[in-house]
Image (cartoon, rainbow, N blue to C red):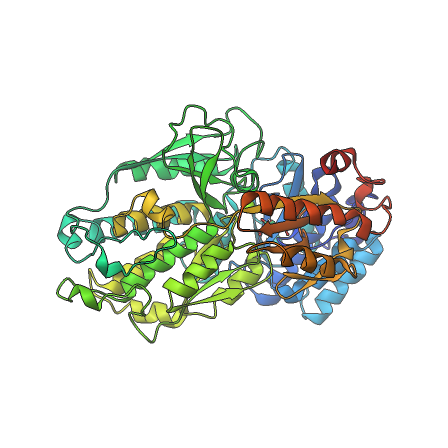
Length: 591
Ligand SMILES: CC(=O)N[C@H]1[C@@H](OP(=O)(O)O)O[C@H](CO)[C@@H](O)[C@@H]1O
Ligand SMILES: [Mg+2]
């Protein structure tokens, strides 16, 4: 039966306050403004599936944003985010003011891609109360172009990305398969490489002291006799979808001695409300619900859709020691570097060098953004010399592509969003490895790490494996380098599009004159670094500052934040009517 596309589009009109724009990770706004956007994304992803004759996906989530927000993340057949060449089409379609204009956009897409009917779209959603109605809108959009929308599943974002990728490769792709793949790899890694029998082949790590990077060979450490010491990790699940998923994983992990104590598991407390990875990183504070956690213990935090992971250690006071995404990347690079050296026990200690590549043919790289702490970048340059560092604009879509250029590409945003990619050539080579070989270890790590997108569960398993394998405690990891004090602020603006950037977002092109003022403020600050960029997920401009001391970093960030209002055009009533002039919260904050 022919579908009345125009009639359907008119059932989902663009809300007069909506201003959809494909941002850092898809479309996001207050949930009530979204039905039109979600419907149209349903149609778009069905057409993409039809054009490529593969399955695509949609996740209804606003990740770390508040409960009342929602959004759409669009999943390409590869399992990555929507190919950037389609972002413009997504914008044009979702911004079309009328059903008629939207239909013209869909017709244009059909003609350009020579596609008449939509294909299959997998749907997922997080725990937000608006999920139900938005999933219905997405399904209706898929059906409106004669595509097939599968029943929506409650999933963490990275699970759906993984499932789409697997399915298009003809591999098992259910949620149970996802857990089997990641947890099975972890189990095999621990039993093969962390047993007392294999321990003698592994040299324990040398914990360098900050500012004094000694040769790892000067360490006076005994060989370990067993490596996987039972651990307990208290995990802040942001009161989000990750809680129920981690609960599934924790049953199997318990058997290996890894006990996950779930906090902020959604039974009380709001989604991402004073908790979750974004809160912990931006506030540099302990999440709510952690009062019973003993200071000094091992803690982690994930975000509302479980694609970000951070570790932290609560102090006696409210403060924390944060082990962010940069540090996870450095830990991963250290582990991989040592595995690549395939260092058997017979080799004399003096042949071991932290930075030297174990296998010259393997190109390993770390991909960061401007938000990476300068100390982490310096550490990789100075101490992991075989590892290249690349910087890209914010957003996994950029980091992922840069990481794919390496044989082993480690990408992490400072906020804990990331994974490790293994190139097809590398995977083919690893398949030839024998039981217990370094190739097998890397091959298992490629299964542990979600190859489609950043995944908090992958990250947690990686950190626990790496620490166990290296024989490190959290303090050894912390002691690798000392973060430069930093401060991140966000300033609400009437129209963030007036802020444009260059040099991987580290410099402003517009508003004119602001970059010059930033430069002169930075010039007088010891180890100063500061940049301003528009958020791609919120109606704010973000300010990041780094300096030799916390006071200086705070001062620099505040100075620049206060310059922003005077460099913005007078507030109009755009942005969904959210601002008419500067909000009270900003005025209060500025004084
Ligand atoms: C500074 C920061 O943390 N930015 C986050 C945030 O993007 P913004 O464009 O900065 O709003 O959300 C993105 C999606 O989750 C994430 O990829 C990114 O790292
Ligand atoms: Mg997220």
